[in-house]
Each structure stands twice: as structure tokens, then as C-alpha cells.
Image (cartoon, one colour):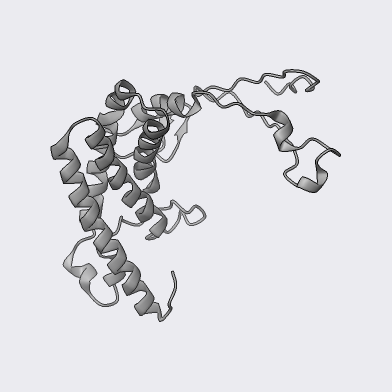
Length: 220
């Protein structure tokens, strides 16, 4: 529906959001500039209360994962979009871990553990595909051990590129997958994932150093 919401008035004004099939967009606008407070609606005037959005979203999104463990970058309608974006794998894992840290629920986390483990396996598979002799040549050394080229940064879908954005999410994903395994009492998985995190971190730091040297810069 494109109908406007009723105007907000004095007293309680409740607007409910839920994760589910896309039905449209609700926009609630308020100024973020302190100098306008008292002159127009300020964002704190809404006193937003967020309840269960992260848990509902995780419960809805996780089943859209591909059999390979690849996590789709987005879901359109009921269709998981298969384009090459590699930040989403780590992001799903981080979401599950962050939710458990702030709102511990062993049953909920155990239910999503197969998705977390599959995403971590997929990360390991695709990063190993870049640990090749060809990528050890001086002009390609920064690529060694990174996640493959993707379009995660948007705007260059015609030419996928290597992206540290993906790699930092992957590093966080390895870390949080190991943590979740430990929380669920799977010591073997926790140790394996921690070792993979360490290997990937070494490759990532080496890549950053090689990039800086190749481009003769002292920043990334």
C-alpha cells in the first residue's frame, strides 16, 4: 500500500515492523541536528523501541543460504540472489554471534549453527582457491589467500574486484564461528575454525603489506 501512515500525535504512537515478505517501505523522518531540537521533530522524539528484529531477520534469512554454504547478498521476493558478493558469508556469522552475545539463547543459536558452519566452510573453500603459485608472483602477491573477486562494493558489477571489505568480514566471520562453536561445546570445531582464522589473518596482513609495497604507499 502507498497510503500514508496516520499523523503522529501526543501520547504513545506505536509502529510495528517485522521481518518477512517485502510489502513496502516505511519512512519515519526526524532531524539529526541538535540545533533544530524543539523547532521540528528530532529523531529522539520518536523514542524507538526495537524488539526481536535481529532474531526474526536471522531466522528468516538463514534458510536462503545456498547448498554450497554461500550466503546470498540479498533476497528478492523469495529468491536468493546468486551474484558474486563475499561479504555476506561473514556477515551472517557475525549476526548470529552478536545476537547470542547480547541476547543469549542456546536453542536459537544451535538451530542456526548448521548455517554458520556451512558459511565458514564456504569461506575456507573460496579463500583456498586464491592460494595458488600464480598469486605468489610479485605483481600478484597481494591477492594470495584473499577471497576471490566480487562486486560487494557495488558500482562495478561488470568487473568484479578483490575487496578488503570482504576479507575483513571474513576474518570476523572466522572469529565468531569459532566463538559460537565454543559456546555450543564443540571444541573440535572451535579449534579448527580458530586455526583457519589464524591462517587467513596471516595471509590478509601479508596482502596488506604487499599492496602497500607494490603501490609505494604507506596506507590502505
